[in-house]
Image 1 (cartoon, rainbow, N blue to C red):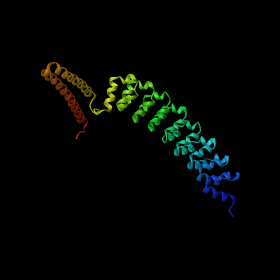
Image 2 (cartoon, one colour):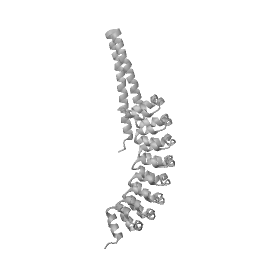
Image 3 (cartoon, one colour):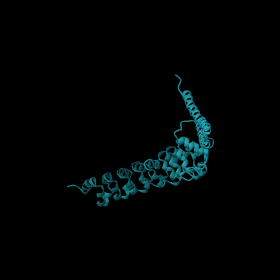
Image 4 (tube, rainbow, N blue to C red):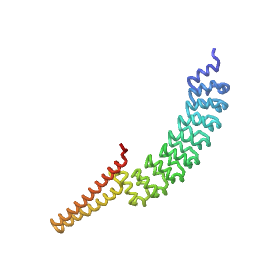
Length: 291
């Protein structure tokens, strides 16, 4: 005839939470509790206080169900090995970690790797730690949202996020969005960064041109050639207006003179384009490996 322990072992092997109905002696039996939490980590809730502080039992429980960390002793909630095992499986386990481990770079980054919302539970000190936040934004650009105000104004941290996704500028400080040097670097990477710039920088010709050059079909044309091309377009616009004016005022003669003006403008644009092509070819030849 099976003993009560054997009967309970058979029961918890099928349903770990059957431990709830066991005697206090069997709830304190490590073999029985290990079998129970291996089947269902939540069964740790019914174990004795002594076994809730047993590292082997708790590790087995959180491996099966990370929420079991909620029932572990305070000492084990502060045990880095146990908490890492839990957050590696599911980032939500950080919610149950000790305050000390919520400030541990390795533990929090393991959680952030899975879900950036884990930073909701990170310590304020960690959110202000430059090295940690650099690593976090490289994992997920939305991490910038949780950074301290000081780090939201840190050029390197913000640019690391913007390099991956320009929309990270949404979380940058207003001072940084008004920093000409920084925004030039940002729009050079992605012209859409101009959307987040201060009103003053949105009206800055160099910043605007860098943004347009970054996103336009002309991005491979050197900036000096592109600038000249824009000037030529302006000349062409004036010439076209001249055509209309002279056609109305001087008849055929006016049309001929104005047409010549348009032709000159178009030739100018062609020369700019040709110069750009030659410049690119020369650069390519210069960079070509020697035979």
